[in-house]
Amino acid sequence: MTSRYSILSLARNALTGHRDWPQAWRSPPPKRQYDVLIVGGGGHGLATAYYLASLHGIRNVAVLEKGWLGGGNTARNTTIVRSNYLWNESTRLYEHSMKLWEGLSLQLNFNVMFSQRGVLNLGHSLQDMRDITRRVHANRLNGVDGEVLDTAQVKQLVPIINDSPTARYPILGASFQPRAGVARHDAVAWGFARAADSLGVDIIQQCEVTAIRRNGGQVVGVDTTRGPIDARRIGVAAAGHSSVIAAMAGLRLPLQSHPLQAFVSEPIKPVLNTVVMSNAVHAYISQSDKGDLVIGAGIDAYTGYGQRGSFHTIEHAVEAIVEMFPTFSRVRMNRQWGGIVDICPDACPIIGTTPIQGLYLNCGWGTGGFKATPGSGWVFAHTIAQDRPHELNAPFSLQRFTTGHLIDEHGAAAVAH
Amino acid sequence: MLLIDCPWCGPREDSEFTYGGQAHIERPSPSEAASDADWGDYLFMRTNPRGLHREQWLHSAGCRQWFNVERDTVTYRIGRVYRCGEPPSTDPQ
Image 1 (cartoon, rainbow over the protein chains, first blue to last red):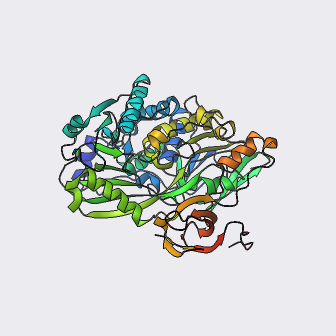
Image 2: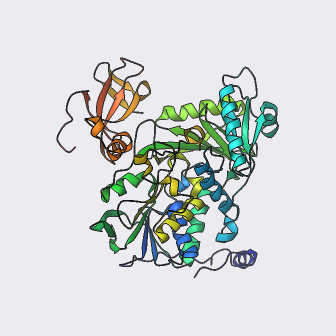
Image 3: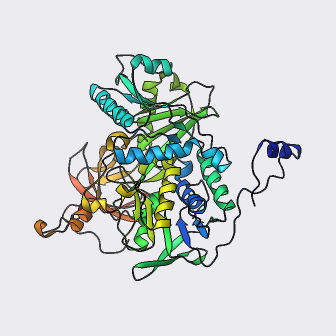
């Protein structure tokens, strides 16, 4: 069993040179049968397993991960957490997640380094500012914090920003959500993994699902690279590979998987203490505690599973960053990478039941799933445990692509998450 | 960077093109007979395969013609390029 992390355990382990820390979670071989299987050991899958075990008393659960924890999108994003969406449905879902973030380190006994340093969404035109004002009003009606800032207030928060009125895309103002911020992404995966494991969940890495077995309209298990496993409830949280998994069960999804790139600079001294995003010029940036600038680009237009994208996409993001922050023009970039994001036509996720009994989907988070990690796991665990969605995720059903009741979040979500 | 062999202009880099998504999607016909599920499938559902994908591209900064491409979505290797109206190859790869 895992021991509790505390100042005492830190001091005790310091005395022995940090050589005797216990393993954070077990790596058991898969059992032949589980009550629930979660396909995908990213943040969403691990959070689902944790809430199944902690809130719903379902502990005979395995999380199947084809790679390693924190090897997929969980550790490939730019770690931004916010809840300032436009529509009621999405605001409620993301704000629920935000509230879970606010207590997460204590709850998991794992420091996820959630830092509420605020997020700015810049406006560069009169229409941008109208949209921002509308969104902030909608947020406040939904109990989400937010304010509209003018150029001078933006400059006060971010002194290094280029506020010249003659800039190609002048900054006319911004929305600001003070409670938003960033978190340490792989700590989120590790924290949920450790907490779920301590409740009895088996986390099985290097285990790829190759087929979903059905008996009529009911799922009965999966075949994996580590042998067959039986389960009558299977939750799929496979992000960019959701279409591939769903196809194993004969389901078609409205998803398209695209490469999304990000990059970090060399570490520099603290210069940016909030998150700056711009949908119009297509870039977002924050500075990590380590000092590197974390920069997100847009998706590549074509679909792809290759975890890499086009160079001109990076170039485009860098141009926008240098335009907004001329002082960064001589900062060197250290690393660049891509992740595979599952884009939904309305830029909103699909979380719910499917026409196949016992098969549940949690996908379509596109470019912005990280912020939703705890909330996504919370509603998905409820959906699997009760065999019906929670009222928070009921609007996000697969069925909406037949009824036409889409939740069009492109205005607040399309580019920069 | 993809090098796309436009059937009219020859090989050009992908920044000259606009991506048009999955090719060979047929509109339900007659449309008044289509159910909501048929329409939903036509509008939104996509194969999104890992591997061979038949897709549409528009040479927007060139000849402005639409055409079809067979591309591998993992290696990004481009195979056959063919004009609209031509049938896709029947071999699996």
